[in-house]
Amino acid sequence: MFIGYSDASVKNMKAYLAFVIVFEDQSIIRRRIVVNESDNNIAEALAIKELLSFLRYYNMKNGLILLDSNGVKNQLKKKGRQIHKYLSKDTKKTLRNLQIRTQVIPRKLNVAHKICYKDQFFESSPLLGIDRTYYKRVEGYPDLFLQLSAFEEYRRLFNKTFATFHEAQMKLNKKIWVADLVEDLDGFTVFQLHNKRIKVHGDTIVKITKVNYVQVGSHWRVARKKRRLVKILKIKNDFQGIF
Image (cartoon, rainbow, N blue to C red; front, side, top):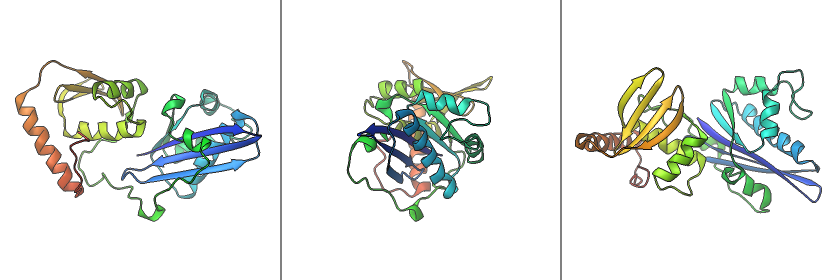
């Protein structure tokens, strides 16, 4: 899945809208749009509208949109003919058709935030070069969402203080693929990678914990799976820092 960020800021009677989309192959699209608007809530709604328009135009499906506005998130939940003056009744239908989930995160985690404030050029990847099928060649590769509390546990337990949300989500999916399945009960599955356990409920990573023991055999299994993943993806980069 792709992971998108949306944000907006208002300064000198102008609204600076921004969105960032990170794709499976780590291609990144960045956009900054300036409009005449002084209301911050309207600006946040316009930012979502611009992001969805972009995704719909290029028919980019299966993703997660992260935003830091509870107001916009609540508007998206409402049932009615008109969600918001700037979020039409078709917005929820668009989200469903594009198979997109939305999630609120703290502003400090929203990578689109700095694009709103910085008046500078931000490079994007060429659209034609984006590979949405990057992981589809790997049999059984997970495509899981990440709960915010599990993200905080990831940064603490894996010593990744400055990891972004999309980095954590993508790397945890890699870790789950190479890890051992140790529990599978009542909709919950637990994977163990060395001394870390990753708990999954349905399609979402919900918890990460540490155990005080490691099975020797698991080291060899993990090492073999890492080599296999690198071979399948034909990646020549050093994966040591990822795992």
